[in-house]
Image (cartoon, rainbow, N blue to C red; front, side, top):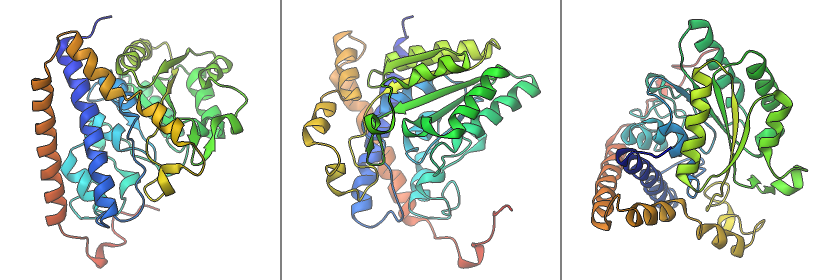
Amino acid sequence: MKAKKDTLLELYTTMLTIRLFEDRIVDLYARGEVPGLAHLYIGEEAVAAGVCKALRDDDYITSTHRGHGHVIAKGAKLKPMMAELFGKRSGYCKGKGGSMHIADMNIGILGANGIAGGGLPIATGAGWSAKWRGTDQVTACFFGDDSSNNGTFHESLNLASLHKLPVIFVCENNLYGISTCQITHQSISDIAIRAHSYDMPGVTVDGNVVLDVYHAAVKAVKRARAGEGPTLIECKTYRWRGHHEGDPNQGARYRTKEEINEWKEKCPIERFTRKLIDDKIATRKKLSSIEKEVVAEIDAAVAFARESEFPAVEEMYEDIFV
């Protein structure tokens, strides 16, 4: 399957937007303008871009604590995203959710989630909803390698398989759960093999090659829309920064600088840039023009966030559901 030129450029723009947005958060967090925690997606851009490009606007996603890339790829606007990170009233959750809880039901973002594995049962529920309502909507569920040990993972895959729910389970295997390397918490190297226990396809792809991710997601989405049930896609990737901003030396206390640099050489954006130029899909001038547009959009988002108001103390208990 060969992707069209427009698709290729959209994948590039999405990855670049995620990278430059996160790069800006690094600076803003260091300056003290972003409160709370920020778990950045730098290095993993190909996964969100590739999966979400295979979805329709009315499809759903569930995200994680490292969710900026997912929601940008699904179509979230940068201004309310940035405002939310600043804790401002004009943010997606009125400044009360922060980095880990961005949601927009209008475009199928069912919420980022600060609980590891917390999005798995939500995605399964969304799959049930689509099946009961008789639509062909699909839900993509993002989660990490460590979450694949949780009960929510096994329960969700079991239920989705049993009832052939239209859910794509996307494991972003970046090798670390906080500071714990995969080899110390699992006896397997490929998480995708766990799909066989639930009678669904399990696919492992290079999560730093956006077209590999995209093609796997297109196949899984097609299968789900046809009523054939879920798929587990494992994307091998790596986070360049620490578990969160503030993790000393980008996590150097539990991983080596050599390992970090080795993965940086596999940068998904640089890889795709070379492909676009080599295949004569775009010139460096064209890609530079795209970058300038993205930077301007991020600049506008930062200005919007800075100018927005904080929620009033009296609003503290509004929008709380019990």
